[in-house]
Image 1 (tube, rainbow, N blue to C red):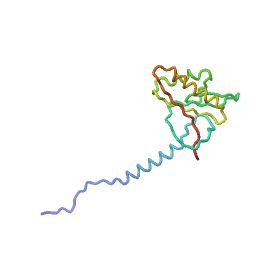
Image 2 (cartoon, rainbow, N blue to C red):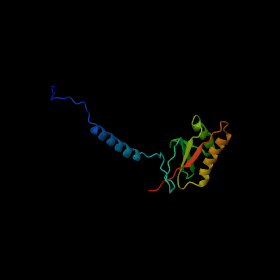
Image 3 (cartoon, rainbow, N blue to C red):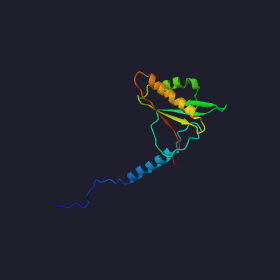
Image 4 (tube, rainbow, N blue to C red):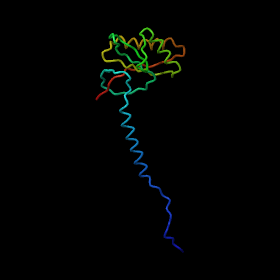
Amino acid sequence: MINLQNKIRVETSSSSMSDLVFLLLIFFMITSTLISPNALPLNLPQSSSDTRVKQDLTVYITFDEANLPAYHLQDANTLIQRDNLQAELLAALEGSARDAAIVVRADKDIPVEEIVYTLDAVNQINDADNENHAHKVSLATVGKE
C-alpha cells in the first residue's frame, strides 16, 4: 500500500471568528448602555426596584417656561395642551396593539395630580373603546444605583 505524505486536511479554525463575535458583543453591550431614552431633561423619582417594561407610547410631563405642567408625546418638540391630552393619546394609540404599554415619564417635582390626570385619560380611552382595549400605564423611575 502506498502512503501519501501530503495529506490534505479540510479543517477550518473558528477561534478567530469566535473572538470577533465576542468583541462585537462587548462593543454593542457598551454602546447600548450609553443610549439615553430621555428626550427631555427629567429628574425622575427614585425606586427600589429596577423593572423594565415595553414602551409603545411615552408621555413626558415637565414644566414649561411659566412653571406650569407641560405634556409631550414621544418627542420633546410636540407640546400638548392638558385639555387635548386624551384626544392626542387616542390618535397616537390608533393602530397599536390591544394592550399597548404607555410609559409616563414625569419630573420628580410634578404634582401627583398631573400624573393621575394622565392615568384618567388612558382609563377613559379604555372605557370608551368598543373593542375592549386594555392599555396599561407605567410610571418611569430611576432604579437602584
